[in-house]
Length: 176
Image (tube, rainbow, N blue to C red):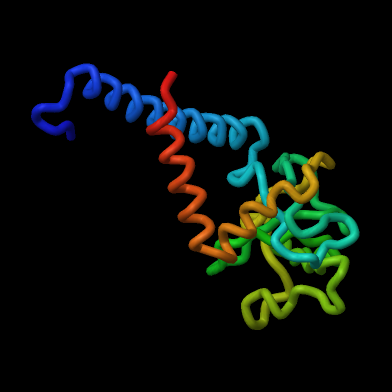
């Protein structure tokens, strides 16, 4: 890891920089896991990626989610869910609840700014998504437009690599 002939003081400083970087990464992971436990959601913070929920939420808004299993989902509530085969969570409003005799419940959703409901997003012959796909619902608290950085990093991969490079360089060069 260190070069031969490198000044021992510089070796120690390099070790401290690497340790500092590791602590930053592990702290971020601990905060994320802590938020997961407190909110009960596998994704406690979500960025709105489209304008489908305007005027309630705009593209780039950062939402804080909760997932209280004991609270039933009602028609008219805004929910965040993930469809099988897609990684990106969807933020939409519940239009209908379909409950079968066997207790299976499906939800039909629609973005406030969309002309049609979400049936086109679901698997064929499906009328909605199931509760197991639910990530949570917005707690009413959100930070407007702060998530635009996430959108820029997804839309422009070179921007993402530049930001990550700059952050890594800052951590390694920063002396404290």
